[in-house]
Length: 209
Image 1: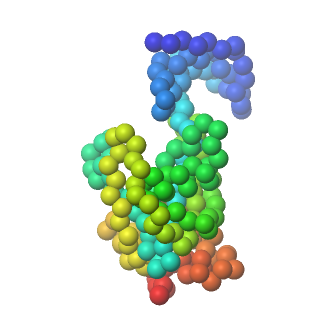
Image 2 (image 1 turned 180 degrees about the vertical axis):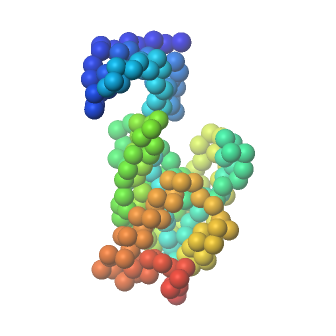
């Protein structure tokens, strides 16, 4: 176990950090454990925080309005999930560069038309990282998958109207952070001057051709 103590100091809103150490750390995550004093002077002996790199995901659409989806087994929940292409931002990497890389590696697709839909804290109760969600239009197949160690991903193309119908009806499921991407897309599409993008708002109700 590696200990890294820090000087006492104020965090925010009256919280005081009394001690910090890292019970576990590797290339993927770091578990930070802190002894903290609350504004009413209550002491929490171990407030655990997970330090992740920032996350990125994308709603990527082909010229035919097919959404590019990635199917893979998620061991923590013991099931196959069909998700948006997604991944983590490497050290020194910009979020946009990270999601372009992830889309290409996971699916073999690329796009020249990218829009940031939104960014937020991924899970501020326990995590330090942010989520950045994007829209990519006119994505095209440019190569083969280039998967990392331990990755087994199947790529699926589903028409946007059918995809939204399945999500809205509850037939298909998504991770919570991907639902955030859909919420941001709805607002972005409704307010876009681009008629192509505006078709994405409420697609399962109005349809796209």
